[in-house]
Image 1 (cartoon, rainbow, N blue to C red):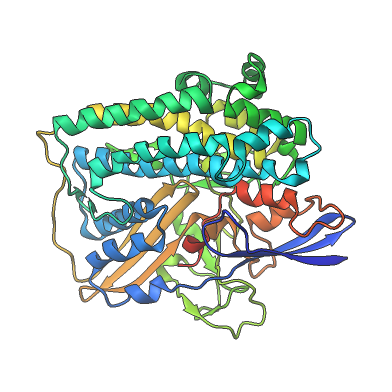
Image 2 (tube, helix red, strand yellow):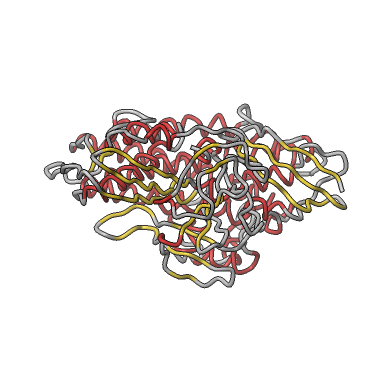
Length: 484
């Protein structure tokens, strides 16, 4: 057996190291180390509860709106305050704007450039793929970055700035939208749609979102050359490299649901077990385990509402600053794949039934969400009524608890707050990458990525295995969110 340390990873938000034990050119076991401790839980203690709206978005610069919405939901729960419909519509638009920008960035700048690595230089498809997806200087990046920048103008119209806007509040959104703003937003969305349909998909968003099976997807891909769109290119590479056989993890998926409007969520919450059965999500069954983390303060797994985040290097079993979240003691995978499985999208359900969660299905679920959500954003903009209220207000109780749960681009994000004597007494956060990149728990069960890496091929002499890169990036890690 041999051991290699992979990391730090480029094109990953934050710091990540992975220790791989290798036997017969395959990963036998993996340990994932989130190397950066930050301590937002300590920072928030004793603060005015509304101060969390300022602090928590600064956990991350690329998913700050997700943190803002989760925080606003938690505070709204504390205050027993509901948003007016305009507030819900605008919050959804801001969250979707950030999430879709993240999904697009991940595909073009983080994931696809790995196929332009010299390890694939002997492949017949390499020259065209390398020219298009070479990191930062490829044709795809030059086309995508202006489209992404234009798309994020939506955030300016809704929030004034990005990241770290204060527009999102427990009772709605602070910046009203007038009729002229609505027209500008529809123009922004129309431009983004044109890029997606012309370059990413090579077809209408509606056609992509309505694909129902792996067979239908294959038939669609075969209608034009693989170079004709970036989705077809990905499908061609996936077939050539058998990405559907790479990176299978727990096949247990969790989603908090997303985009709340009129008491319903566009993507419904739920849990999928290893047999593909869906059940409702009971968030009271979430616990955090610190048995293999450099933390102290709790002897047994605790619900995050009762959790403690206290750094300590005294834990001899520790190998990461990351806690190990579990649902009913089980490892869960979260992300776009989990969202679409719980929402019952027929294409993703069919793919998962064939080969579970893997590199291919995770990536396709992300791209599918772009095709689903952008048309929904167009509908939300049209439903804004400038004559109605955007935000309501209430008083903060002296003592209360609250929870806010949303879906960031990378998966399920939860904020748990306790207020005593008008001040924050406890604030705990579980981010998507905390779920996916967790260390082992007290029973020795590896986290989702650690399991997904088992069996990955490591070629002789590889110090930075390309199979490992594909698996890690298929989860789209955000390490600065992982350990807050």
